[in-house]
Structure formats: C-alpha cells, structure tokens
Length: 608
Image (cartoon, rainbow, N blue to C red; front, side, top):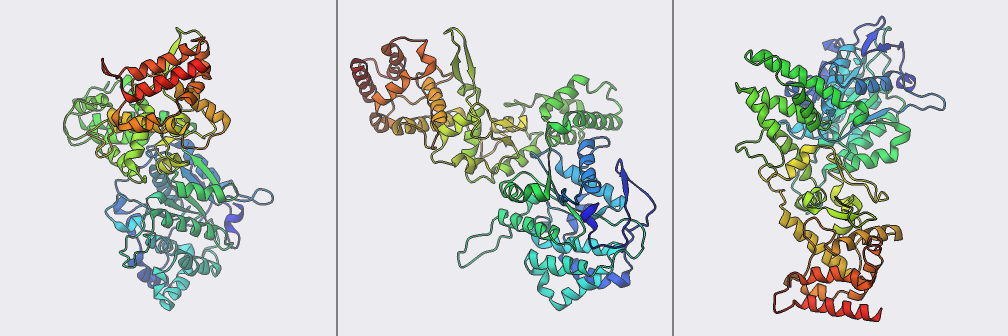
C-alpha cells in the first residue's frame, strides 16, 4: 500500500479479493478500553454530527447498492485503496473523487462501501453530508473534524491518540470552534505524529476516510450587522478541500480519502488544479454499465413487491416494462428508486401506481400529487442554486423545444430536415455578455453536459430524461416553468440585439462567426423555422429595427452558403426576408420597419 503507511509501525500487508479481507489479523475494530478514551470522547461528543455516521439512525433508510449492482465501481474503488499507490515514478494518489450527475447513486455507493469496509476493518471514519436532513449538523463543516476524530479514537488501534486529543481540547477548549486547518493540526495530525502503531502487532489498520455529499455542505447563516459579504456554500466546500489536501500532504497521515460529490464548479476547479498528481477520479457514466444494474435492481424490488402483494401475477411487470423503465431512468438510480418507493408504498394497488408512472410524461393528465415529487424536489433544489434560475430554465427549455427547430437544406432544394441548433448557436444567440453561459450553467452540470465551445455542432446533453419532462410540466416545475410564448419573447429580444449590433455579444473567432451567421440568417429568412419566433414589425422593437444597417445584413445574406444554390440572383436571396417582414403589415398600410427595410433592401439591390 506504499505511502499509506509511511511513518506507521507494525503493519502487515493485507490481501483483498472480491471485497473480502484475507489473512490472519486481529479485530482492529474492537473499541478502545473506556479508561483510555473516555475523557476525549466525552469532550468531543457534544461537537459531533452523530447523524453523519455511516450507521446512524438518521441514515437507517439511506440508499444502499442492491446486491450484485455497481460491482465495477466498487471494484475500481477497492483496487485504488489496496493496489494502487506509488513509490518511485508512480506517486500515490491519495484522494479518490467519485463524481457524476445527480441521481447516479453516489450516496448509495458510498454507504455500501462504508458498511462493507467497516465490517472488514478498512474504514477509519466517515461523514455523510446532507442538505435535506433534519439534523443541521449534517450540512455544516463545523462538525466534520470532531466527528472524524471521534470515530478514529474509538478504534482500538488508535486508542493512544485519545490522550493527545484530550490534552489538546483541555489546553484550548476553543479549538473545536476554530478553523479547520487548526483543528486538523491539533486533533488529527499532532496526535498521529505521536502514534506508536496498533497495540496488537499483527494485522492491518483502517486505511480510508469517506466523505459523501461535499456539495451539500452549507455555510452557516449569520447576521452580520457590519454588512459584510455573507459566506457562501462554495467557500465552506473549498475550505474543506484545502483541509483534505493539507491532510494528505502530511507524512504522518496514513489514510486515503474517498470523496463523493456532484461536479459542482468549486470542486471541479479544485481538482483541476491539484488533480492529476493527487487525485484519482471516477465519473459515473455509461462506462460502468448502469443499465444492467438498474434492470437487476428493478427485478429484485418488484419481486419484493409481489411477495408483499400475493395477488400480483408472477409475470408482473413484464420484460417490456422493465426495459421501458430502464430507458426512462437514463442511467440514473434516483429515478428507479423513486419509482420503487412509489409503487411499493402503502397503497394496495401497485399495478395502478406503476401504470401512472409509465404514463408520466411531459404533460401527464393525472391530477393530484406527482409520483415523482422527490425527483422534482431534487431538480428544483439544484436549479435554485443558479444565479438566475428562471433564466437558466428558459435557456434550457429553448435548447430542447421541438417548436424551435430550424431547417437545414441539402444540396437539393427538396431535401430538408428540421434539427435542434447546437449548444454553441443557442448560447451565442442568447448571451448578453461574454461568459454568460458559463455563469448560468456552472451550477447545473450535474444535470446536463455542456459541450466545449470549440465543438460548434454538439448539442446539450441531458443526463436524465425526466429533467426535461420536469421543466416542461407546469404542475411539477413550480416557479421555473417557462411556456413557449416566454421562450419566443426572449428569442425575439436577442435576435433584435444581434441585428442591431451586427453580431452576437460573445467575442467570436472567424470560424465561429461564420458558423453562427450562417445559422442565424437561415432563421432570419423564416424559411429555416419550424415555428415562428423571429422579430418582425412590432412596436416593442421598432426603434431598434429602424436603427439596423439593412445593407450590411443584405450583404451577409448573400454570403450564406445554403442559399447560393437556391437562388442565383440577389433579389431572389433578399425577397424571402422582405416577404417575411411584410407578413404582419396591415392591408392598406405597411409598418414603419417594413418600409425602412424594403427601401434599404431595394437600394442594396440597385447598387449591386
């Protein structure tokens, strides 16, 4: 295990196969004698978050991996703990970051590993953050270090640390309210430097600390009469990451740290800076074959429901239903866990409840409480962390709405397909300042993937289909629902600004500008629209449209590759645009914008 035990004595190797520990070793999980640890434990106890322990009453209903599921992930983590580690040119990576979209089962994996490794003696301690827990201590960093220390000194092999811990607290009782950095030094690192090894000279020692849900750690809300800036959740999370980095950088620290969280911005930035040398990352995606795990989980849970309801046929639900649920889950365990909780609830008609779930879609007709309320709550919570949740919801809805597709023509005029524009096109069009897309999306990357800006063709990818369904359902998406008229209103506003400014707000390279203008002008002619949202004559934007440089836009239109083979003459290129402008005019009187654009277009054609 290489560096894991540098500075530690009397430690033998341990062989681990298929999550079982082999070899002769004493039970190092045996609690230390009360006389040795009572003082430290009594001093720590008022300052711990008991609900954050892996086996706490608060977590009695916490999700666990179903047997035979998530095997690949667990084996990858176990291999990192036992077999990977440095020496020479291969330095150890002492933090593993397990991350992925919301609902991929991170907490279930963490809980299962903590339970298993605790029984095997590999677990040194754990802390499960939770922003939804009724115990406020589970969402505060204040209780992290005392809780971990409390667990450590209860292990027999670390009992001699307790004397140093007790001494540190008695000498400075305020240490439990000080910065994490100071707590780590006084309560963990200094005692470890005096640690003489396990009292029994045989067998391994616990090797891993588990921290789950770091992204759910919240800042303490204190009223500051001086008007100072309020500390953010991200500040607390960053302080914890710095503290963990401090731990693994000290040679006296013999443990590895297994960290679970969503890929929130502050956490991503930290690991992108410290990452390659210190961190092994696992991203829970298709590589770990979640679909087969989900199908196995569903079959087992439906069997339990049938057992509790003897009247259900053995064939329920059918293989096709299992397959459909797996597809709807999109790799997210949170969806199927919610389904099972709903169908297997106190109701005596699970078949009816399952039919309700299967009918759930973008616009379910059923009234009453949604069977997906827990999932909706999760999505709402994540969205509300954005700086402007409603604007984010509008952008996302626009990017996926079928009525907002555009037409792309083949080399023959009669070949046409309607497609969703790329993520690059939408973010470029909708942005009001450079970098706005990054600001808006950075907090929801656990729900959707945003392609790199250099990929002009890639579209947004939603990790979970039910997230789209949630956004489009007014009854579920309370406070964040955006109807088509609101989407079109924002698009009209942004199109006007692009026309007036001769381009979008973000600074573009020539390649990016050509790509954007091409799509924008296809839309501008109205020939490229599936629906209709381009802004033509309206009193709301009259002044802006009258201020546009029409000749400049006519010239750009003539440069669009897709129209070169459709119309040979400039009038043929310009005419569809002018026709679309004129569509909203009254029979006897043209709108001022229409007169202005037609006049300038005629001048352009005549001059050309």
